[in-house]
Structures are given as structure tokens and as C-alpha cells.
Length: 169
Image (tube, rainbow, N blue to C red; front, top):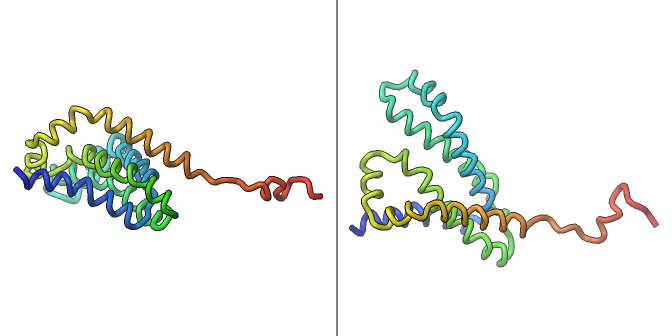
């Protein structure tokens, strides 16, 4: 089926393109996605229990709360980080972490999809193959994102070495 493949491609491409077009530091967004995953793991059940007080659909609240916890750090980080990637080299270096955000984001969000969406995605060969290599995808995505962060660390000029507390000649 072409439609589920288009859906999978869109779930990966839309976040990646947003990060690239808006010049958002994708490595930091990737780390925010990891933070969201930690929130789901450690805060998800309590958040779902709290939200269930206000809803009759406990299942929807559980999955909705989990998706909210997963994506909230990502959305806030994207808003705050608009325009933080500068120069052609920075934009080029941002492509792989941006793709990593899309792929890993989809892997992390899939358990919280609605039954119909989950069925459409999980019944494809592409999804089955992606799940087989998900450990490799997450590992490489982490290394790529960390490398991007390391490459863009602030450079100190020689003028700054004296600084406020250095020797004055």
C-alpha cells in the first residue's frame, strides 16, 4: 500500500523539514525528544491518572497524555530555538540530526498512536524493517546529534583570553 508509506514518510519528513527550514538546532531538539521519552517513562502513569479524573475515556487520556509528555519538550524547544543554526555549513550539518528527530520521534510515538494509525503504519514492510534496526537507528542518531553539538560549541578568540580577570598589559 502506498498510503501507509506516504504516512510514514510524512511523519519523518515534516519534522525534519521544519527543523531545516526554520534553522532550528536539531541536535537540541533530539535531546528534547529523549527528555520527552524519559518524562513518559517516569511521569506518564501519574499524568494519565490525574487526567483520567476529568475524562470518561481513560484509554484516550493515557495515550494522549503520553504523546503530550513526549512531544511537549520538543515543541517548546523548537519554538525557542528558531533561527539558531547559521551559515551554510551549519544548515548542512543540521540535516542528519533533523532526520534523526523524525525517525526516532516516530519510533517513540508509535506505541501511542490510535489503533487505526498504528495498524496502518505497523503493517508495512518499511515499518517492520525499521523496527529490526531501531537500536542501530537510535544509537547512530545519538552519535550524530552529539557530534553536531560538539562541532558547534562556542569558539573562544584570543582576545577573550585576558578577559575580565586576566592580565592587562
